[in-house]
Length: 95
Image (cartoon, rainbow, N blue to C red):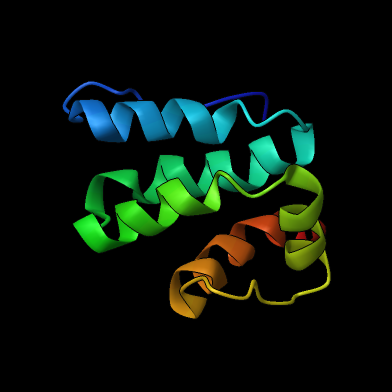
């Protein structure tokens, strides 16, 4: 996968901005993890989950990828949302 498969049509400005930022992280690995998550779930995230995703994308790619790759957690972040994001990081390895 080389980029978003989801159109931003019908999304509010906040969701459009988050979708873009999830696909433009700086490292390809995190683009794929966060981008695929955003493609699948951005339209249905609650306001609280959007707040959490906005905070999460401020974490460095190195730290974020390390937590995804080692199946860890990130202190101070919602474990349920991060757990859902991590499933997108493990999809390619299961194929």
